[in-house]
Image (cartoon, rainbow, N blue to C red; front, side):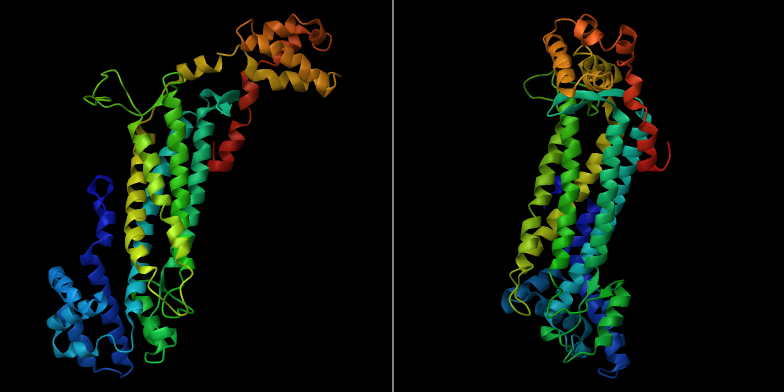
Length: 435
């Protein structure tokens, strides 16, 4: 993981120091329960904690042992024995490596989810603040990139708020699914370890018990977790893409904050590029690329294989670290987003009132025209306005076929912009619970 897109709180979860500390806690908690069951001496379990609790695990030493034994958990246990002494022979009784590795990964992914949930809360807070700020800021809504009908910038942001609220709920569900413990021994039958050991370790680590762990925790849980991260990344990209479009020179309705001293181009001093949202688009791709491998990890051979292992060593840190960085960057973009209401007004008026065409169409049908005739009449007057030949309002008033159904006063009333935003309060109540 390159430092450029990493924040320390998240990266520390995936450090060797953290991983070995969690491994130790799994082994020590298991030893406590085995001592209570009389499987190992109580004094041995006590010494494991006494000598290991404050120990600094020598990563270079563990790596050196692993180069010889070609097994990461055995390398750790060998080093732990060097710290604890003879009583270390009672550690890992009846356990298998996956008990340690999978339970540790569950802890790491749950901790990562907790950070990501806080990140989403920051994004939600920023979106809510800016949505209320621009609740009635008129802007043009676009479909296919083309002017459609008026909306407000606040309604746009409210839609993104609702989307990230859904993402938060998905991540909460994914966190609950992944936060499970497996201490069930080879092939998961508890043949050499009592199920109460698993329950004890799970309680101490804040995890639930995996009902059937074979020899590994089933990877559908992990697939759902990474899928949730992928959806969040896609939501980030959707909002980033919107901002990038709004910042285009021809549009310029909003733009990323451009700080004093910032430079946009090595060649063109005038440039103010949407570099942050472009970066977010790229980061979203990095998160999503972890989803398919997580899905493919579900189909392991029989009770276990390790085809998932190398994948998870990569995608666990990659997806969570990138997404953590992206969510915080997105929050900053929203918090500092520069909005140009006057430019929104200018763009809204560019097409000479064409954005009101649907109201005229509906009014003609209600006045007695067939839908086909009404559409033809409106389009007949809209196309010249599209080319800059008059406005839709003026063209309609000059069309005798239109005025045969609607007088000038009724036509004027159809161009009231307030009509388009009269239900904004309803939308805000649905999204935020208040207006």
